[in-house]
Image (tube, rainbow, N blue to C red):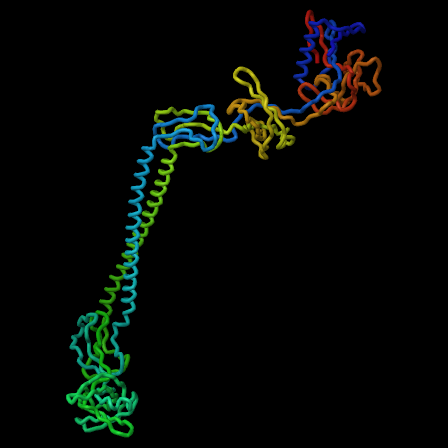
Amino acid sequence: MRLFKQGEGETRRLPKRIASLALAAALLGAAGFGAVRLLGSRGGGAQIVTDHVTRDTIRSTVRGTGAAAARESVSLNPPVSATVLALHVKEGDRVEAGTILYELDPAEAQKATEEAKKSLAEAEKGVSSAAERLQAAQKQLTEAEAEYQKLASSRADLTVAAPFDGKLVDVASLLPGADISAGQKLATLVSSGRLQLSLYYSYAYLDRLQVGQAASVSIPSVMTTLPGAIREINLVEYITPEGSKCFEVVVALDNPGTLTEGMAATAALSAGGEAVYPYQSGKLAYQEAREVTAKVAGPLQTNHLRNHTPVKKGQTILVLGPEELDKQLEQKRESVVSARESLESARTAAETAQETLSSAREKVQKALEQEGAMRVKAPITGTVLTCLLEEGEKADAGQLGILLADTSVMRIEIQVDERNVNRVQSGMSCTITQTGLGGETTEFEGTVESVSLTGKSENGVSFFPAVVRVDNGDGAMMNGMSIEYELVLAQSEDCLVVPAQAVQYTEKGNCLFVKADRRPENAVDLGADVEIPSGFYAVPVETGLASSAQVEIKRGMEEGMEIFTQKLVESDSSFDLMS
């Protein structure tokens, strides 16, 4: 940088005091890079500040502040209130994952485990009892519903009908409207049209007789013989007084209407053309006799019961009123409703018992985990940043015990202005400066790890959050320390640069005022309104990157050219900086 006094066409170097002042002015001008105004002399001498076009490396950067934070941190707090039996670390210690950090008195945790196990045993009993109750309620409902359905289906039993063709005998004497109970005998129905006769024959004829074989039945009391047939042959052993062994033959025959049960009769059979007679005669019996009973209870409504009355199968012989059955049905219906309510109550109790059991199991599991957690281990490899425990002292559950952090990699959250976010990409390098309490500074190299795609706004200013990763293997970067960062957005190496205040922004574009003995070929005229120092010419230039102090010149200049930067106006014994 050079200083000149302009007056009477002469140029000379300023005294050292003025040069120092000019240097300060130049630095101030560099800090205030912006539009430049050209002013004329305010009276007295004017000092011209110049510099030269040089080669250098220029960077376009983004600067800001932030706070360093460990990539991973974890608070290891006492799980229960207990006394610290042993403390194995102190602040600043680096530990490996799995290292025991401190041990707590397990007495309270063991007590809690025992209580949880007792609660679990009670809950298991409750589940078993509820299951039994549920099973019993289900059985009760099933039985009640079955009884109701059975009773409901018995409405047809209010009408008593003959089960087969026959004759009524032993008829009960019933008064009109009499209450008939279920199971009460009403009469006996006999198959009066069909009779049978049981006789005994010698085993000597067994092989010559068969079921279905014709028989001639003689009934002496009515002096008649009727045809019949062997219905059954039963190999019994009937022994006669004479010592003969006989088997039973049952002969069936139709009743012409003149025979009755108890009449003496015999039957002659034929065996190979030989007539065969029984040991002795027998007595006629009805082929079928069945008691007719009331299946349901009820008042007698219609009565067709008469002794010796012939009836056909399905014929109504008695009708009962529905009052008693309806009453019983209503009772059974109420029993079903009650059983369903009991089942629902039992089911709810079972669900509650199961929930209680699940909760008890969780409490046991948690108690066991807490008991096992009395020896607190490091879950990660890192450095003990904070330790608020003291050996022999009681620690409260949940209080901060030890803060452990992995500081081998630090993360810094920065804010990128919306005007620069498109130029910031993952993988870009970033310089981090940490200032210690004593003022000493330490520099780190970081890398942009991520840039958010969603912007944020604070106080009317938009920005995009980004994260910078810094390897911190030696632990020099401290967790929570304020830092300054510089992010290089672009860089040009070994390029032509000039001071930022040297660039003149005119209607004809960016220009530099170049000192020359004669007018350069590429010089331009800026008009009478723009004052150019004597001996200097306006030369258009193409600019590139710009920092707060320098501007890259891509075209229009050569290294070493002397250029105008500032003008100092002498006022009394001092100089005023004119830009």
